[in-house]
Image (cartoon, rainbow, N blue to C red; front, side):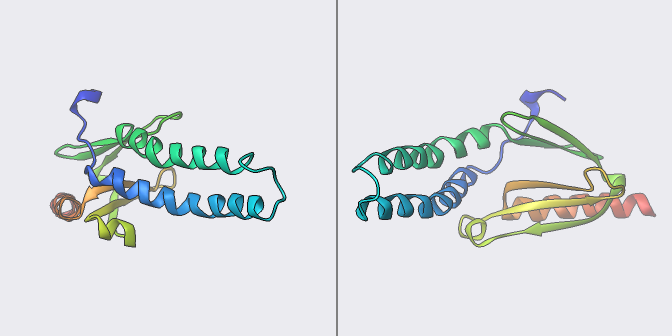
Length: 154
């Protein structure tokens, strides 16, 4: 299994991560603004760097995360690749799957996305999550994996 054969996440994943990052950065921007308005810091000395950092985090980091993730669903396993600095390449054999969840937070729901979570037997990497899937794709993958697990147990 080479990197070229990985399936990319849904394109809306970038938008969802940008929105989540903006929500996370907003209190820092507001705090910097309050400190400057209160006159505790020289004008622009703290707000400008915080704004630039927030803008970088909102525009560039989600795109890098999108390109650093991928998956491949085979006949009997799911491969999940992720990570910018520390790469993780996890292969989950369907025979080890105990149960499967599909999660949607409010931001994911707004963009039609979901996270597929496979819970496996064992304690190392007992749960493997795959965010950024289209909701219908996540449901279809869950059913395909469930059918394979059901077929193996019979």
